[in-house]
Length: 515
Image 1 (cartoon, rainbow, N blue to C red):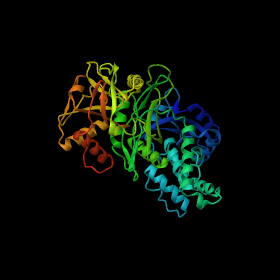
Image 2 (cartoon, rainbow, N blue to C red):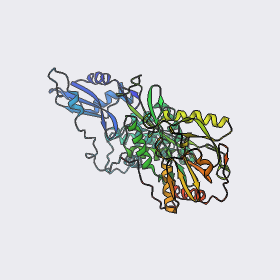
Image 3 (cartoon, one colour):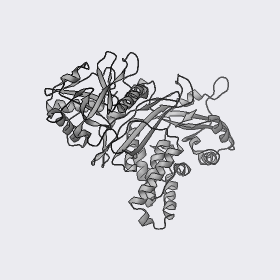
Image 4 (cartoon, one colour):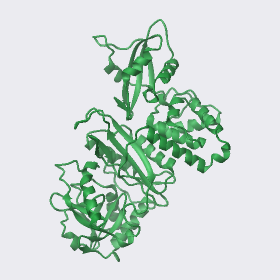
């Protein structure tokens, strides 16, 4: 089986555990808890002798890689049995596990490094009470949080802390000692602990984390920032190597104070999109929220993209994927100038041409999911549009009506009112919802319905909206041209959207994606 993209042999864990003297029964399981999969090892001991949990853990760490270390070792007098004499694994898997939060003693240490580590643990694990002998992986830590912990400790030490070192130094006291050793490697700790040194340490840690954990190539989605923050977008879902992947481009702004623009809405749509493709995310909303903000904070990117990807594992190479694992990754990078359109597109507008492919009806494809399979049409259509000298393509639905551009929603203006297609054959865009809410607050009437191609000639203006482009005026659709000057509706919406993402607007956008 696979846990967080690592292939795990439960039998090998059991075999190594049985090498420890005094053990009678051993059962290794992968259990689901709080949206995560963790390894647990149950041990039944002979009545004559005992082996401490610490000794068992030390033996496993000496024999097995970090990703095969149990998060919890539970010792019992004997393990439950089936009538045939085998261990009753179903009974063990159904048990509630105490991960130790309630048993943690109040942290009263005065060591500054232990205090620093305790502060990071509290942020990542949500623990109120801590002790120096606690094991990070026994109180809720897992590999995703280990990546974030390594980055945070790298920032504190101004030296790279590898994820493998987190697995090797599991207790709070051990990690504090690790910090001291890292600082001792610096020729001038005070100087190297400055911004440059800390940035370099975090960057090296994040790069190694991506290499060491098999993070797949990420696709669209991300964040785009203005000076006041970053636009975070999310994942679509695409088929890759016979498995379903998710990538949902979702736009939100993360400000310097780490506030996120509609982050909860994007995570909700991400989860809904996954369920449409018949799988659930393995992490809770809180974990995804914290991971996204941590990546932005640690990378210190003010203009860039974040992409969150979810995909099924490769345990089964066939069409069906019922028993495959689910994985999630978060990545960040700088957003290049002119990523979506030319720098002057806001003033001069962009050009669109009607594509030859059509969006399928909802009866023929999971159109409400951000599935990259749904974006094959957009990829081909935009390639053809660019070759023809246009900026993007417009797609029609199965009935011949306008739907959207290849990666953005479409709006028209006419006589001071807004017109936009229905979302029958496409996702319900969050940026689109923002535009509708801004228009309602400004008293701009909006009609949502079927729009035939001839409507492009009847309208007096058009624009597209989405994560990468925000709101972009359209100067041309096929052979019809629009005069961008004097379009008060368009300017009102651009200004309103800018105020919304910068936190200067009280416009409320309903969370239509929450379950």
